[in-house]
Image (tube, rainbow over all chains, first blue to last red; front, top):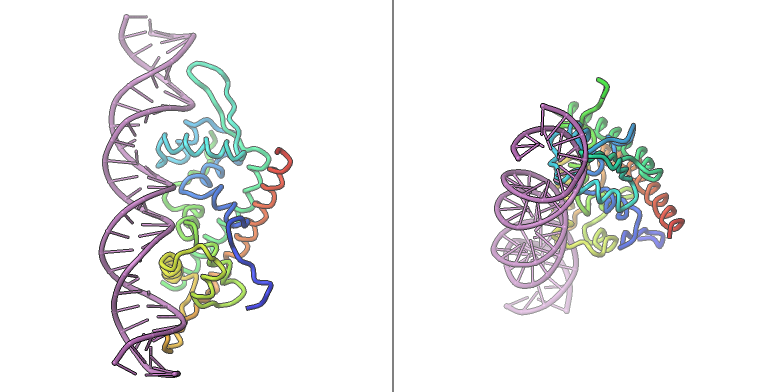
Length: 113
Length: 113
DNA sequence: CACTGTACTAACCTTTTTGTAAGTATGAAA
DNA sequence: TTTCATACTTACAAAAAGGTTAGTACAGTG
């Protein structure tokens, strides 16, 4: 093995990103927030099989990591809106590549079936 | 909400890709296999904190999903090598975007610290 | 015949993630 | 004063993911 081999230890970009975006729901949420900010109830409609708990829990994590902001309108009944920050928008190329890959992958599946 | 909204239900490209690549290790393994096929022992050196069990388990999953192939040299002591398939190589743009994103993200962190 | 190196398996446990169901707070409207 | 809508919380349970340790197979070597 050569000396320019690239180990993937504690702090490496791949790990950073998977820690930030890992799990079942975060990327789906970010994808839905890309075109416009949304209220939790609207997100729930767009991702029907997420539970209310997971939705809010994941939104909070995304806020904590700075990818999303919460806007509170201070009304009753409560009205809040979540939207992408400028860093949040920067996952879009990544999502685009995920979509590209999935399409390639399914194409391959259809060939070999 | 308009009619062209894009729900993310059961079969959508984002879900396909996260199911294929989700978890702590798969992307790290694929990344290491990109330049050349490797034996498990070599992979283990490049990803020091993966356990042997996880390494083999994840390699098997990657084989099952067609991203990696196992080459058995039929020698004793056993000698096998794992390498990317042609579809396997197609995750590289995705990994590249993950790396781009991580770099942008850490840059942002340094500004706001 | 005991020992070695390599890939892999199995049993078991801990931790993390996800899911379910019920409940809270609030002001306005009926 | 009861009901409503919305965002959110809490307690608990189930499932998935990950980790640790010990073991197996086997031809070659000493």
